Image 1 (cartoon, rainbow, N blue to C red):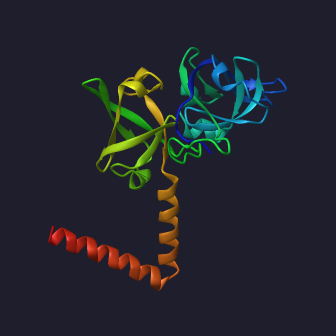
Image 2: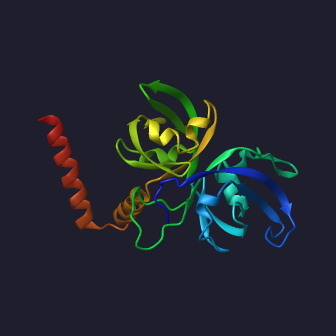
Length: 240
């Protein structure tokens, strides 16, 4: 579990497609350096969110660490800006910055929102618009089915950063970055056309699942509650 409060920005050192080392396990591995701020209490097997993606540490030293990337991670996230070819995954941009956050420790202050580190989809940056010392970002999600979980003033994690949704329409949504956040996360380094990782609020997904299941199974009590809520909302709209 994470909070979406980015602790530091690391730097991509290397991507290895078939890492035959003991820590690579003959899979795809990603090495991140300039990460000393989060490694003082690191252990093998710890979870670190890299651009919001919960990954397992397989090797580390005082300033860098390595994680493995499963095929599902490669398909669903923006890590390394991979391109799928007939021979497998290629790409990686050494020098790219990534957001980093350690898993939440028991007893620590909770500053953001509940973030699992399980990326739902990616979103394309449609526009970036300055306003004063802040930045507006408009984003378009790749998998539109997740738009039902994105609501005005709701939580969303973008590349692992806990942010508040501003405006929402059928296909896009906006967020605003204040000056402090701009200097502590990777998003202002991106440009129009780039893709970011999206994790919607998991509480919305749980509520959706519970309500849908209850309605399918014919839960009359819950159905009456939902009907009353809808009727009240319609009445409020008729008589504001």
